[in-house]
Image 1 (cartoon, helix red, strand yellow):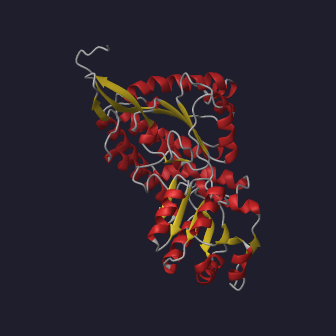
Image 2: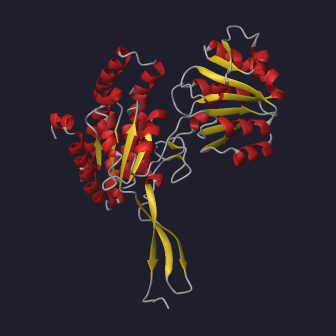
Image 3: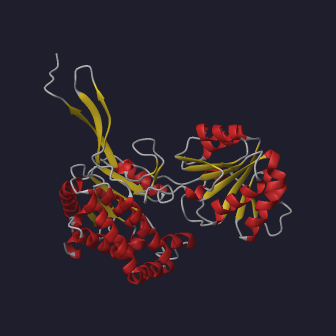
Length: 430
């Protein structure tokens, strides 16, 4: 379809995308594991072979973003570095090496009537994904869609349009090289926002919508969609340094969780420190943050322990700071009495994304795991591990903060459904 038609008749264009995806989904649902894995391996090879041209396309997006005054953490999200491209390629290969769950039958049990009842894992069908910034999401979504036997329609942000188009071309090449329909993965070729409005109101073609981006985008999609939505809300993630803990370990983990990269949703935004270790720990982590120019939004107690740290940038925390996802070199810090207050604070203020405890107390760790109501809860490690690739899922479509139908990093299983299968030998109901 020509660009003119795309821009002048977005409803017709989106309808065509939906029709093509629906037709392709039937082929994908019955594709063999070998065929899907061949497409994933071919995509990995194409990504590596086209690293230079992908970076050239990415440079156009980066240039526009900087000219438009986009904040540097957001520019950072746009970058397609060789490392990012290689990680995408490895994700495709990891997915290809994983078992194919489509068609698996579980829980088969004989009933008193003689029939046997179980559940079969099947593709969802067609999902639409609306995302911002990171162009590598194009590959993550496409590769998971292929592995799970679905078709998808991807609508990336206008800030990454050239990068996304270049990546989508490679995806469609990998599909056709492997004998699968190119329409199994379609990228919306226009930045016109009307397409989103049409896409989320087409239940006849689209089975689920997955928004991945800012809070305003997700709220709009959730409000206006006429198809089910898997939500990925903001990441106000917490690290809680417990009493007792290995202070050296805590220092390493908190530093990594906050400063390894500021822009991801799994970066720690709020630090809670038990009163019993605050005097020892806070000056140490304060020096790390001061050296890296991380601004600290502090409670009165934590200010007292940080006041003498050379170069520390301290601001009094407001109530809003406990809710904030900064995506920047800013962190909120609060001293708490212990594990009870830490859990209560997290459950009140977090976005239910990812939280971690650093502790030597097994019972505190177990309570934290059981009582913190977030999609990922960790002990003695960095929140930065909350990621589909790091969890061994191959990739992720996003991190769902919903409780239905998927929660946490959404991998292959999150893009499937279960249907009941019943096996009989002539039984009739009496």
